[in-house]
Image (cartoon, rainbow, N blue to C red; front, side):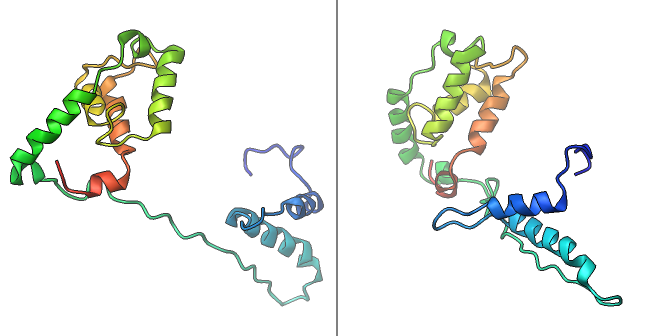
Length: 175
């Protein structure tokens, strides 16, 4: 709380009351940060009642870190192993994909923001005809002039979309 002015800080009693007002929804529990803060504030409140020479322990919880699949886990050599299968999939991609219109994405502003929000809302999947590999490739090589800011580089937008591909797509080794 280094950046909170002393005039804006809650007293211990106010913070305890606020924490009591936090009730989890049915089937959910309070975030670990709130449970830990409640334990700490309760300990601070009870510190005056501890006899001299005694100590007080505060039990806190720790969330399990989320499981993150490693995008860079290994090379996909399926294109080298089965090139005939690759030709069929490239024909399917080419038939379904059409580049976004320049006026939709090129000059930034609301339309470009709506385009990227739509891509993220619908999900970026390798096999998607709208927001799949062909779009990511076009962004990476600069064929689609997507910009939110005049100094944006389309390559960076392509890199960002590649990183939000779901693990089910990048863990499956297929071209």
